[in-house]
Image (tube, rainbow, N blue to C red; front, side, top):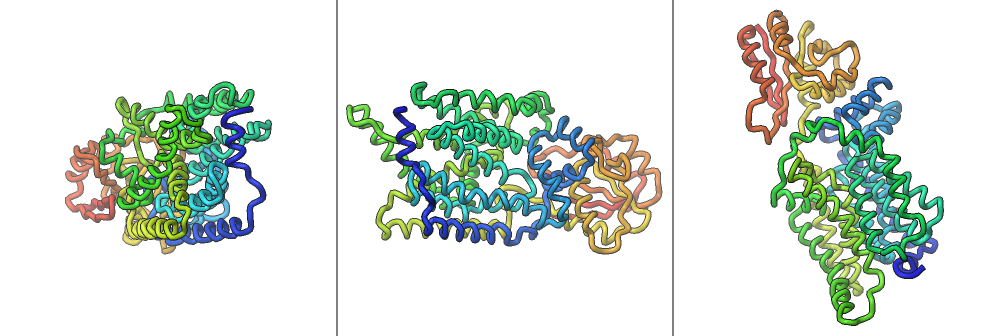
Length: 503
């Protein structure tokens, strides 16, 4: 077979890993483990993390019902977390489930870099990933993002493996991992499309026989996810605003690792990687020798940009552009930058360049430890502890937004002190959280009934920075409660407000 396959075999032939490479990758994994476990429980669970834990704690009937009707995205992660919770309940332990695939991505991106280019590029890419603040940030979150990045990276590695060695085992692995990635996060489907576009650029004579059927099998396996995405309520993404030019800058800054100067450094390295290819393609049009191996750059550029481009076009009609949804494209950025840095063949040039990236990456990571750079985090830990520290027997509590109960319940379950916890009035369908607690809607009749009683009521509210108009539920609560409760105490926490109404 001619064309890309021999080129891939030549540039990507992998013999037994050399001992220096093994040692370097092992050291990077240890450093990556330290950076990802450091201060892993310093910050409170934010809303989505609390929801993850409570979904995983549901009984099987409600678990399946909720995933099938409301929370189908990230279903693979919820299933893994469900088993993980049997062995520990602390914030550190829960979040460590995300650290595992994050660390596994380090040797995987080395393998990809070596497969596409050479061992130097592989080692540089692994080092860039090790110190990247964005990757560290999502390795410390009880959500599916680090698993999503790992599976999409493995999916791409198996894609290249199928091209050079299209055995049934490689094809089966490519199909299964591609489907698993979609169930880890629906936006993995855009990476699947990027690979389809990349293989279409090869031409029919360069594609291994039967390989295009892989995408048909992936589609069959993910059909339930496709049906869910097509029929589920769009309201779950109603908070996403239409993207602007500054969103593109923040997206790039986050992917690079939390720094404007770091983004410029990555941009320069990527330009250096593709500049020589662009020049050779131009010379080819003038009659020069055909470029060998330029398809690998097309593959990486499609992996990096096509998911964002598709989502950007879709966002004209319904905004879906959220930076973390495209975290699986980050390995492509790192591989392109690593190839650009790898062009410095002299140590006197390469070492200073790597030091610049290292210093800027460490600065971004240290800044993340102090403060989040891609979201405004709610302090559910502090708010819940305050309520439990000050609640009196007979107190009651309600959550005008039902999902706010989920992080509260987690922190209530691990509260260390004596706990006269307030009785939950809403949402409450029984002694345990069930499917309907996630979908309940508060009504004026409930507020009127609560206000007619004499015992104090705690109210748990969340501030949404992008929300300009007052929340109708909060307005209704104010109108109803202020008639019956002349005394209202208010306590502020990051992104949260606690109220205690009493007579």
